[in-house]
Image (cartoon, rainbow, N blue to C red; front, side, top):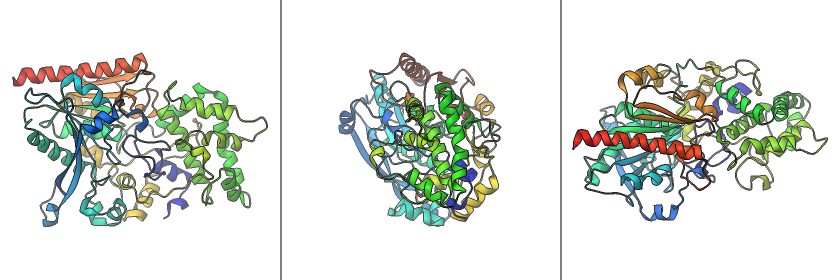
Length: 497
């Protein structure tokens, strides 16, 4: 089954996190567009002193085991996995901590340290960033990611459990490399990386004594009892709060798209109206693209610095008098993507995603059951169908996704209870304006597993570098996180000195 032949439900479900602006782990020039991803707004992560960070950041490659969990001869094959170390604030010999950024679903960049670079001087910390296997420069066997994904055996080693084991090996290696075996390690991650950080603390507590998970949508995989339309409902609320007329125009536009698509040459009309680079083969492609455009504007909305919702709704509400509803929608589309995108002569509404690793991840262990149960949001009703999800993944990779595996391996709707019984030293930070916060941990679980939330914050905003433009509530959120980390380290030193 081809993706383009699926109905709106399947495309919207599988592509629910398409990002049209830069993420924190990949450049805008090298990334395909239509990918379902828990991503971070890279623009907010760039450090204030990127040049200084670059000078003191060195790149290394670790000889990594391809398969940590089998003892077959082929499991012992190795590949080069990239990691970076920043020593500008490192105070060796004083048991200073190691702050480790766990890479997510994109390549690693020297300026990804963000918040870590800001707080490292307070602790004399060594900074480490590790690239996720199968991304960037860490693709096994010296081939491209596209080639790796076409090989069933090679892509079979590509999953989150293997990635965590990679991080464990490299962090132990770094301790030895820098003669820092007694230095406590705290892991950090944002979005999917935040999920990895919290899981790492649970699976490898003897290596990491704490974790900060920023905007980690950790409660919505496999066995979740959270409504499948939680994201759409929160997104719709934010649009309605911004402008009720904008909300209603978006809600009405889906019917208009279907009406035009049903006409003779209707798809050609839509292709011209939205300046598609390739002719639309069905209306679902356009609807999925717009759905995600609206969702991501809500996810990263950060007024007054990045007022994305005001930009979208201002364009729709401020369109020329007499302009039809789809003309108003198009005017918003041209203002909300990467810089100068509005200057393009056409828009890539239907970009292939088959050569990107995240598509494989959501077709294997990271199953996302998103959908709209009924039409009480600004989006079309589109219940989640596991059958269609499975059919799509089966047609692409020849295997069925394992929707309950992560819940079994890490915990899902029962994770808060499990964390309370067995976990400690994890910060779950969220901005409550971020729709993804509805599927994250936003309440304290215990004295040492805490939620640090802000009413105004957006997706992973606390994980970026500080700036003179930061609001007081954002500064306070980061200060709270530093205070908690300091308390962990104080107890560690008491126990080990």
